[in-house]
Image 1 (cartoon, protein in one colour):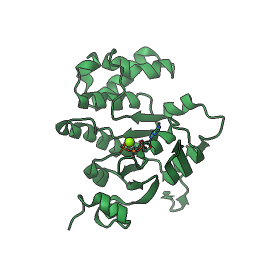
Image 2: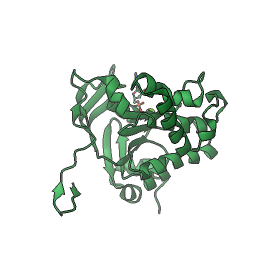
Image 3: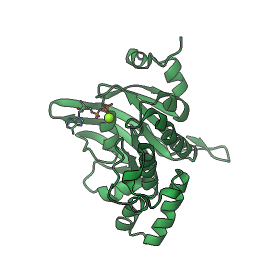
Length: 256
Ligand SMILES: Nc1ncnc2c1ncn2[C@@H]1O[C@H](COP(=O)(O)OP(=O)(O)OP(=O)(O)O)[C@@H](O)[C@H]1O
Ligand SMILES: [Mg+2]
């Protein structure tokens, strides 16, 4: 609930609502009754051990995985109904992967304008203007005509973020965006993400960067064996986790 200027509380709809989500791969139950709301402008980080279901949960939000049971709503629309236009949906949901997923045979600018021109039928010139703005914001305006192959990992990931922003997404999903990067390069990508969060972008970020989770997110979600074992305010999660599995997972980061 947010306060309106006249003092009355207005109901704010969650941007994403996940209810009773289940997903198995064969006999392996990967998500077991997951419930999660993401509010507009909220930055939610998802942490947890390898195999706990973090990526699968994220991928259910843009239907890269099809839920077995439960519902996923995006902006009030049930994504598990038959009538969802998946391609249209993905125009509103930006996704950044660990491995960049750029087109290596194209230059930076063409990577950024491809989806706006082909999917949104944007005018090429206009798409380029928008893309240059986003490249500027991630510090890569000078690389617009560089071949992707010549870029460092950190530069590639910043291009991937700019490319996603070119579709004017309502939400950005990040799946371990810095895990494939050399340690000294991680910071430049996190800085771009921190700025995006500061601008009010709604974000769901799967990450092992605990400092980022603690200082940038509004809420930390800890996944364990396919369920959300605990979630809450970052300071509370990092100073006084309640669930034994959260305490164990965060033990390296807890003080005292
Ligand atoms: N397409 C798939 N087919 C079969 N098994 C899968 C598939 N995708 C994921 N899994 C399995 O589901 C489990 C959860 O995977 P998921 O990728 O969601 O975990 P994660 O929490 O993201 O782990 P990590 O931190 O290693 O990325 C793992 O055991 C994984 O091997
Ligand atoms: Mg994963």
